Length: 280
Ligand code: 2AM
Ligand code: CA
Image 1 (cartoon, rainbow, N blue to C red):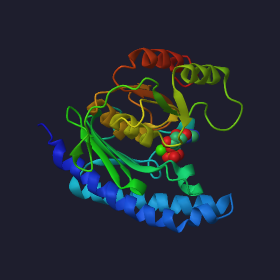
Image 2 (cartoon, helix red, strand yellow):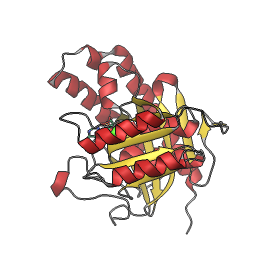
Image 3 (tube, helix red, strand yellow):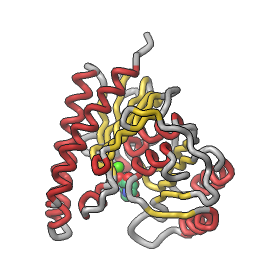
Image 4 (cartoon, protein in one colour):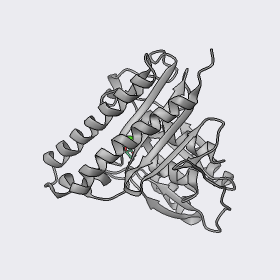
C-alpha cells in the first residue's frame, strides 16, 4: 500500500521547528559558547542535542506509530567499525524511517556561530521520500517531498539563474590532522572554479544549495542523518545529488556532493575526485 508522505513530512516540519526553537534559547543564552573549551562545552551541547532528539523522536513516532527513528545522538553514531548499520535498506527500519540530526553544525553551535540547523529526513522502504531543514537563527524552514517542490516557510522557492562565479560550501579538507593530498587537490580545483567556504554544517549547506543561496555543497565526512533531508531539498530545487556510498552509512562516514543546474561538469569532476578517497 502506498504511504501518503504529506502528513509525515508535515510532522517532521513541526518537530524540527519545536526542537529548533528550544535549541535557539540555549544558543541565545550562549552557555556552551561561554564555557571553557573542553568537557563542559561538550556537555552543554550534548545535553541540548539529546533533549532535542528525544522531543523529535517522540513527535515522529506519535505521527507514525511503528516507524523507526535513527538519530545522530541515540542511534548508531558511535558504532565505528564494529557498529551495526541501521535503516536504509538494511532491513532494520521497516517501511517508514526517519533520519534525525538534532543539531547539525555542533561546533558552530557550541562556539556561538549561527550556522547550524535541525535536519529530519524521511525514507520509505529505504528510498528518500521527504525532508526538512530548520534554521532557527533565521527562522527558515526548508521542506520538500520527493517529486515535489521546494518550499521555504511554506512558500515555493523560485528557480534562480546560475551565477558567473559559483559559490561552493564545503568541509574539505576534513578537520584535524594533516590534510590528505587528495583533499588539498580537490580544494585547489574547487578554488579555481568557484568561491569556496568551509561552513561546518552539511545539512545547512544542502539547504542553501537547494534554495540557491549557494551553488554547490561538498562534504567529505558525513553520515546518513547529515544528508537525508538535504538531498531531497536539493533535488526538489532542481539540483543534483551524489552520495558515496549510497545509501549513506550510519556507521562509517562517507562523502557527498550536490550542485545546482548548470554545474554538471564541476559536479562530475568533484564526484570523480571523491571516489578516489579512502572512504569514497
Ligand atoms: P555535526 O555538526 O552534527 O557533527 C562538518 O564537518 C559537518 O560534517 C557537520 O555537518 C558535522 O555534523 C558533519 N560530521 C559528521 N561526522 C563528522 C565527523 N566525524 N567529523 C567531522 N564532521 C562530521
Ligand atoms: Ca550532523
